[in-house]
Image (cartoon, rainbow, N blue to C red; front, side, top):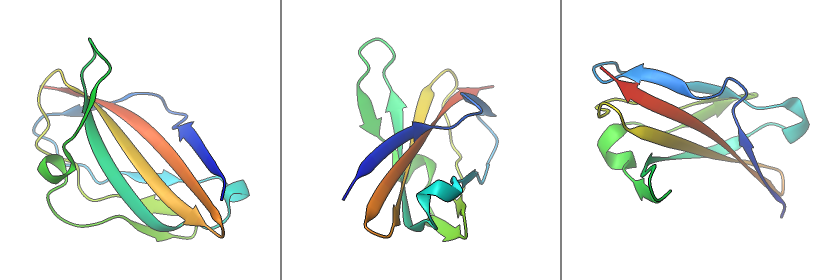
Length: 108
C-alpha cells in the first residue's frame, strides 16, 4: 500500500469563531475514486509544532462521506480565536491510501 500527503492548493483558510462550515475536498482523478473518508482535526501549537487531536470538540457530530471525487466533511465549528487548526482527511482508493490536509485559522 502506498501513502501520499498533500496540502490543499487554496492554502490556509480563515473561519470565524461563530461560523459553522461544512467543507468539501475534491481529490485529483489520478488518485482514483476515494472511499472510506476519515477526518481528524488538530489544534497546532505554533511554538512547538505539537498537534492535539480535538476532532470530537470541533466536529462533534456526523462523519465524512465521499461521492465520486468529492469528500464532504462534518461541520467544523466551536473554534477558538487565534488558533491554527490542521484538518487531515484520509481516503482509500483501491490498494492506496491518500491523505490531504488543510490549515484553518480561527478569528473573531
